[in-house]
Amino acid sequence: VPIQITDCGAFTPLFTPGGGSWYDRPDADSFSGKTPELIVQFRVGIIAPTMTVAKKFRSALGEHATTTLIAADEVEGGDDDITRLVMKPLEKFSLDVILAAPACASLLETLEVPSSWTDAADELPNDIEAPTKGEVFLVAKPVDALSAVANKSWVAKRDGWILSSSFV
Image (cartoon, rainbow, N blue to C red; front, side, top):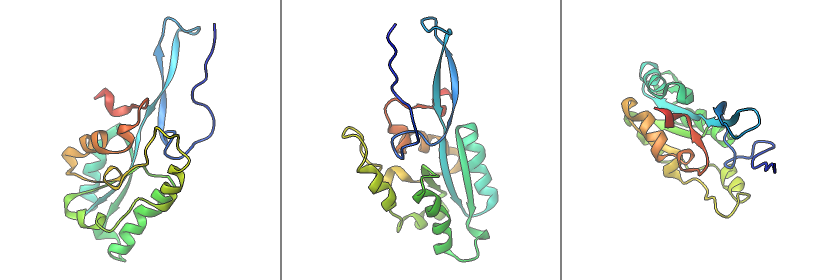
């Protein structure tokens, strides 16, 4: 029986998922009776006006995302410090998406996809496009958070990635 390894090795930014968990899918044709599949979880930086609102986003995303919460009213340095708090992990590929509450949407206007992402995108295979600003920086209410991330983000548009939100 020929074996073909299709994904193996270290994390490659924008090419391999940054977060997820393994699921052993029953597979009668495999030797062990199951096939492991990576179920991708979104890594989302949330900007909200208060921590109460930020926690509503976390709750709405549930187990489908790992979240970094930033409550604008708790950041002492103002808008520059708020954007720095989300851009640093984004630049280091620790987050996939930034999701802002409508009350904080203006903070996203000046943000751009980090240069580290542009550099990493140059290394992607030709059939994979670099994420756009509109696929990285999203605005939604907590009730629409999962839908926004699952339908509009660059992670949702990657072929072959099985999203945790697919099981909702």
